[in-house]
Structure formats: C-alpha cells, structure tokens
Image 1 (tube, rainbow, N blue to C red):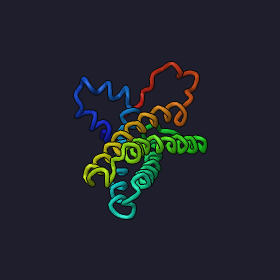
Image 2 (image 1 turned 135 degrees about the vertical axis):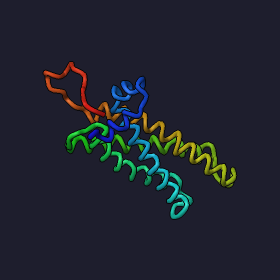
Image 3 (image 1 turned 90 degrees about the vertical axis):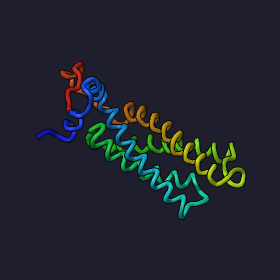
Length: 172
C-alpha cells in the first residue's frame, strides 16, 4: 500500500514531481509553516478580539510562541527528521525567539511609527494594517529567517564519510 506522500505525489503533474522531490525539505518546511501560520492567525485574532484588545504586539507574540512550539515538533519529526539533541532544541528556540522579534517588528512599525491605529485611522484600517504588517509581512520575513537559520545552525546533519558526496535518496 502506498504511503500518503506517495499518493499525493501521484496526483502531482509529472514535470513538477522531480522539483518537489529534490526540494522536499523546503516543501515540508513550507507545509509546516502554513499550518503554523493558520494556528498563529487563529490564536492572534482570538486574543485580540477578547483579552488583549489593546495589546496587538503581545497577542501576536503569544500566538507566535505557541505556533513555534508546534513548529519545532513538526519540523524536527517530519521536515528535517532530526534526532533529539538538547543543543538542537536550545538553538531552535534561540532562533525562534529572534524570529518572533523579526515577526513583531513590522507590526510595531505600523502601529507606533506610522501611527496606523485608532484614533489616527478607522478601526477597519487599523485591523487591515495589523494583519498586513504582522501576519503577512512579519510572517514572511520571519519564515525566510527561520528557514535559513534552521538549515544553517539547528538541523545540521553530519553525513557519514562514505555517503558524503552522494545525493539523498529518501522518499518525500
């Protein structure tokens, strides 16, 4: 019986399949990121519409931290298939902590430097500016930073000497 990955790949056009297999870590990273983006969005709006109405950066930070923990588990077990090491976990959370700051920065600029907040703008404009700056721009910047930093410092695998020059032959 084919695996779920094999069933999905069977539905992908033939010309696209080699690209997806070659860049499987990136594809998996993006799928995990998309899932965590949705989780962040739900938590962020839940907090902003209830207990943290006047604290958008705190709401986004809490949502991002929760999604980061989920991201660690999914990336470690699936995207990068890393074996558990304490150093890896510490580095992951250091990189993720820096990424939270990268993620929050555009929202801070939008709210406090550009003054895109009530009473300077309408509540609708404020929410659109918050979404675009925090959820879209911040997430994109943080995603690029995380992917680069995770590959460079966190999920680094040393290959055995005999397979160092050979390409990886693992299923997606």
